[in-house]
Length: 114
Length: 113
Image 1 (tube, rainbow over the protein chains, first blue to last red):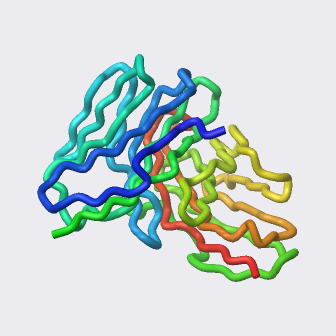
Image 2: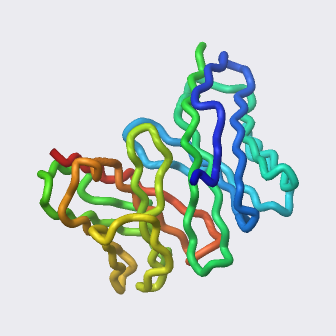
């Protein structure tokens, strides 16, 4: 049972364009939604995260949009650069169970072409 | 300030063998979690430890076990290795047991032959 569905699987964007990655979740108990960036051979690096009490969070060129009623959230990368080429994972967690486990999407491989 | 460190970085084992992977969390972090990442997939939760106690366990067989030491470092042990255990094993640390950012190490690439 996949609790976090991520799309698209791969994405090609021109330099300077906007990259948009979407995620949908099923478990309404989730209350923390981070995005991770992973380069080949490296561990995931935390990019930005949001909690369901806000609808949008922006950090530099990265913005998370959150729609609680639709159980969807998305990552927007503005002015995409070749250095942004990596695999991006959305994730979700809930803090009520006494444990802290992230449920990840399957990832989106982003390629930014010059 | 050092991030999450994992050792070894690469490992090749034979089917049926046992393996121990190690993780040192960020200084001051009390929680360590382990994830398995198969090629082309997102990480899957294996264990979480907080203050040396197991707080969560994912859907993995009993061949997988872990522990956390008084200095908050952690070991992941896998017995009777199968070919399907080949993956990148990731350790993540966070300050508290829940509700705070989790930071990952670079992982241990385990290949079972």
